[in-house]
Image (tube, rainbow, N blue to C red):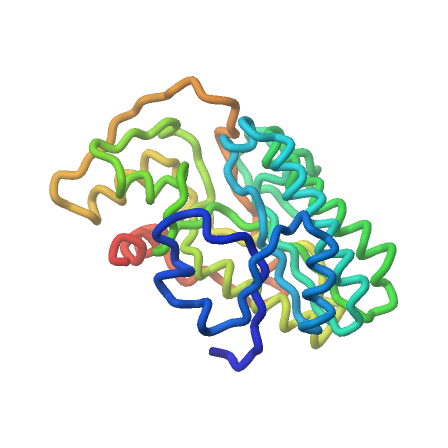
Amino acid sequence: ELGAEVTGYSQKPPTDPSIFTLTDLESQIHSVIGDIRDLEHMIQVFKETQPEIVFHLAAQPIVRESYKNPVYTYETNVMGTVNVLEAVRQCGSVRSFLNVTTDKVYKNNEWEWGYRETDELDGYDPYSNSKSCSELVTHSYKQSFFTDGRCAVSTCRAGNVIGGGDFAADRIVPDCVRAAPIIVRNPHSTRPFQHVLEPLFLYLTVAKAQWENAELAGCYNVGPDDCDCVNTGRLADLFCETWGGGMHWINRYDGGPHEANFLKLDCSKVKKVFGWKPHFHVEEAMAATVEW
């Protein structure tokens, strides 16, 4: 809708239904079905399309799944990043590259203040750790191959997203919609929940800004204000209140694998550099999600 010629490179949608199918996106973009682990195929697609801006969002994104399939998680999240950057390196048309990682890249110290971009990277579980590795891979490629200014390179470390169109397993709001009653595994775990449109707006902003001024490239946290960092129990409360109809949830810790308990982001940098601030409070983000 902004006038760009868009090529998407991805495996087939992992859920049925999917937002990709419901929006008939395939008819609006050049859709290529491929595996991010297939370097040869990706390089060929880059040669054919000659992209100028590249957003890397492909991932195995579920913490609990990473405990079940750690090798696949690392292949996708680490070598997948290597492959995308290698395709960018070999394609002279690319001028702006953005790698989207996660708030979980930081070594979690369970402290009460938000992590800053300068804090230590060291995710605990295979998902979080693989995303930390993805950050390091991006930094290495940036230092090794893109110091000539041909292509600006940034990463965005986004908090947990909610919003319409998510059908995945182990996602708090989709699980709420499917459940009767709702089971919450870790109601006291605090996360930087935000509506999905918030980080998407920032990704476009960063990609555009670094195209125009490469000095703006860097690492950026993307999350809600402190007042909107709530625990999963509060988020479940908001869902039930907004959905209505007597919906309720049950606290039932299932003894699952380790996950961080307290996680917040300090987003001072992205606010200062781009003059950005979140559009939604968490109550409004939930209302928009439930409405969808």
